[in-house]
Amino acid sequence: MTKILLLLLLCTQTTDARECKLPQPWESLCGILKNRVAQTSSKMKLTEKEAAQFEQFLSTPQLPFRHLTDLQKTLPKTTVELIRGIFSRGVSFEEAESIAHYLEKVVESCGFKNPNAFDNNTSHIIGREWHEIDYTGEGMTWQKQKRAYARHGITNFKTLKNIQKFFAVESRLGYFHKIYKPQGCKIFKPK
Image (cartoon, rainbow, N blue to C red; front, side, top):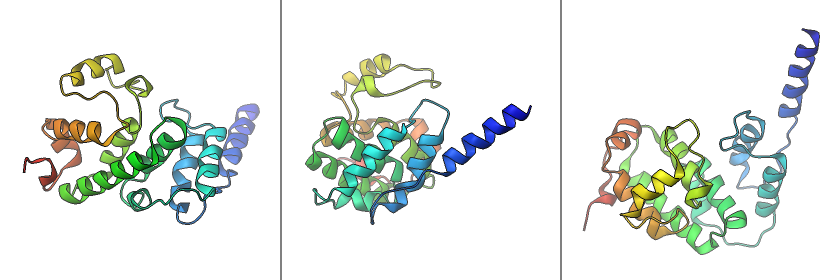
């Protein structure tokens, strides 16, 4: 029993000891990195090395972030994954900024009553190829999802065009309204 308590105490101290090294204006993402490094579930977990790479990328002033900086206010988890898409999944900076701008418009247009659920679910797919999405515990596989969305021309989640197609489809599904509780979503209506 004593060994278990010591191990639990050590794990807690290690988790709490993570020092965030994100520069301003990214400091609001520190809690997400800390939680994802500390979590026991493998889904969306970050290793300490991955969190450090994220911090290093944002500490090297090289890109003129605009929309990604703004997106973190409403979709912080999605922002983390979109930035990770730039430095580790081959998403171009320009494409990531375009996706961030589009997602800002989605949030504004829809007025979600449950924006946290939208952020959680969007962060799960954003900036990824189908095979990089972990559907553990959701009763589906990336292969099945890829086949289902192929008829809509959605090949991955790395381009604005694919993200726009995806949310146009998703916004028509019952779960979208039940979970996110949108108040508008005029962005998905044909012009």
